[in-house]
Length: 181
Image (cartoon, one colour):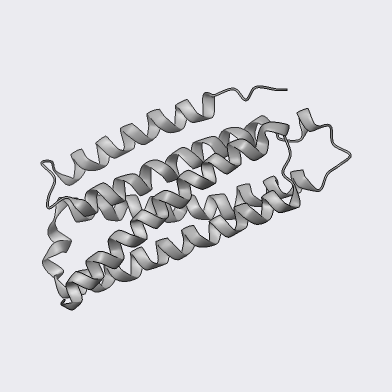
């Protein structure tokens, strides 16, 4: 097996782990917030998932850089360029999740004096839902793009399609109403 094949396998593995962990994390968040608070154990579980996602993203980026160095002509491909936009948004979304949302979700766990129904502000809930949707769609898009030889569209069309899907899904996710028990 040559180096490129090993890198492609590792790249696909990173994308698979990223998608899988994002799905599990989203499930956990929805489950953990049923009572409108997050316990220390739940917070620790989400932190572990976050570490796995960051490791998968790092491996995706590292293998991607080496793959491009082996075949620099990839830089001219619309598929590659769209995938780079997706990975950049994945990274930015991850930063928002870790810098803005995670600290707010963790604070919920330790504010016992706050009534459960008021412990998760709607704005934070909406951002969390939209961010989770963006993360899932972006990981899935990166995986699909990585699996295809090429895409039958230009860079602008690919980014436009991706942005349209993201907008619809993020809006839908942020508009969902959490049933208040």
